[in-house]
Length: 520
Image (cartoon, rainbow, N blue to C red; front, side):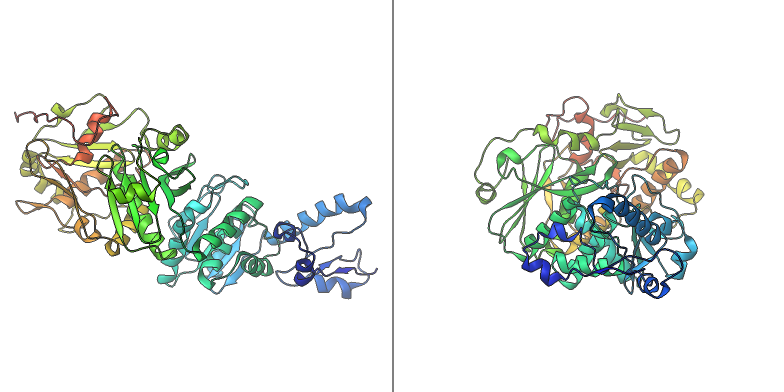
């Protein structure tokens, strides 16, 4: 039986002015395997290696059925293949992701799961995971998490690790992330990176939406900034609200801002961080993280200007097209809703963890400690008398030492460290509760400063209390568990905002004062 070979050379397709999307549907060196045992020489040529390809006949009568068969055959072959892209980078399917022995053979230490909506983390106690809850839809926005992914690759390689990237079949979602990394690491255009990955894994085929986003990203990072780009900081998507993303918006102007959020305006010579009056602390922290990533991956300006709603500079308004009123943007409602704790925020008292949703400041007693959960952040409030009476025994009973108890690392932690290189300024808020000015640290070094009271390490104490609560509950932990402890009389605007938001979310940062309840 004769063997048919169809060679579609890249230069020919270019001469025909074929769109790049069409190239995805071409089959390079397509071979029809012989039927039966005869003609084995021809069949053997098509079966070797990860470049296995099958004939898709040109005759109209049999094209449909044979295409289905060839697609199924290829997917079946590559389903069990751990395709090598680089010495420390592999691409494959969920079948491979679940095969511990195969991952061990390839010395995999890190796993990028691109299909968390359907694929679990198979070995969470043995391997380091980064899970993305992507759907394989053309409208899925993947560009907003590019730098989250690149950070994961960089983290792995700094530790001499090997990364395995997968989705359900290793065709679209995962291959797009691998193509992204090749484009960044080797300064490649989309087509070149795609062909590199395709050569290693013959079923590679990002959907058209992913393909266009990758090409647009390449254009963005290689061309100078000629007009202001406006990004909003928000949860990625409903299946994955704990991943905070930076989504570019076409609403460049005052009408694109929202008092509930944080926004980054990028110009040729500056980066503006605008914080809405009701923006959650988590969004502010992650905005600084993404600024560091813009500087790293897009060579954005090192000049960072922080702007508070109501006191914006003329330069900021000029950058986004002029001053104007700022109000809630209905198109953002879905994202902001993801930040809310259902039926929350919650106030819990130590040590019984009684959950209260109807609370006010009068409940904060000097001889007690409380956990406040709001906007995916845990605050630990420590009464001064509580610290004096109970801190030593709590720390002793949990065998802690002078170093803070380790807490799970979050994306916020990664970027907080990155802010060390971006800015060393601090912002101050008006005095509250009759106390001194509240200072919000803007550097990792400042954020890591140990808080001491009469020799008690408050950071260790707070982390111990948080761990006690998380060990006692089946609830999923908030995205940010490393907020600094709050000592009675030194409450920040961020803390008080959680109390006031319950009753009137339109209130600004500094509410009216209310005294603490006197000790018993």
